Length: 132
Image (tube, rainbow, N blue to C red; front, side, top):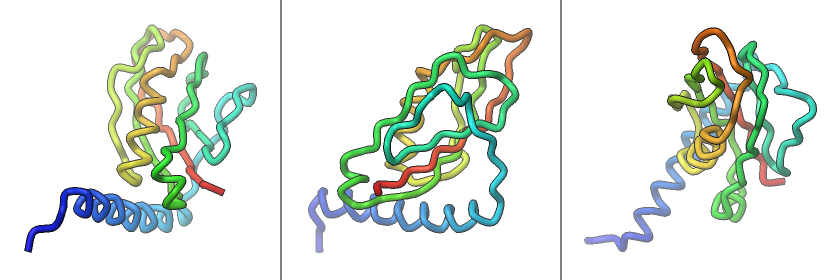
């Protein structure tokens, strides 16, 4: 029997949601995050945290995906960003989270800017998505 493409896509999103919930349970056992710059506000339903020592100069808040909000998808996304000395993001590694939420977090982080430094740094980022 062949399932329509839309059914397979929804099945993939649901499987990602289930793995995201499992990741959230793990994250609840080991919360090691520090708040980012206090002068930047997060969007409703989204909180961003950084474990790095480098100050964020420009923070773009991820948009909560409409499909995720409809599905009441919640979860934590963990990213590791390699930031060049000039403050621009060179690369991003996904360390955990639902695929739908990861995509929106990655898109936002690619636009972030950090203050200049003497060398490249690795910044650990955590985004908490909650549709409520």
